[in-house]
Image (tube, rainbow, N blue to C red):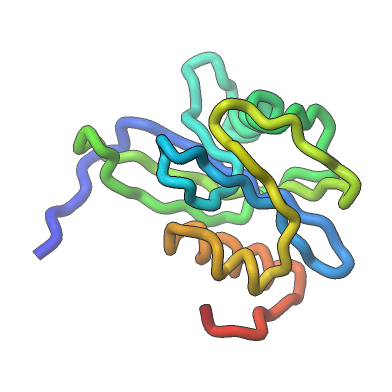
Length: 149
């Protein structure tokens, strides 16, 4: 039996960078010390962040150097989860449209990046909630993955 999650202690944001057509997503790989998993841009909402969008804009700059996304749109999707310390955190997902020519400047949080197809993104993303957010993004853009990953 799963214990119920308590009140949200930490709000977080994540941004799925994408370009069209065709739909491709820009994924980031964590270094070995953080599992070498593929992830979107993500981070905690800090006290000085006035909105979730402001927090994501800050994270985009910190993790990729991106200062001017073509668009930033809430996916109206969030997930609550238990952090390693046992606290309940809540994650808010956003779609971030960027030019396909965008090449991020990686922070120490990542050791690689790659533009990938929708199906490839679904196969690489480590966490199920990341896969669910990508499916939400694809639906919003009228795309359907060819696989059931």
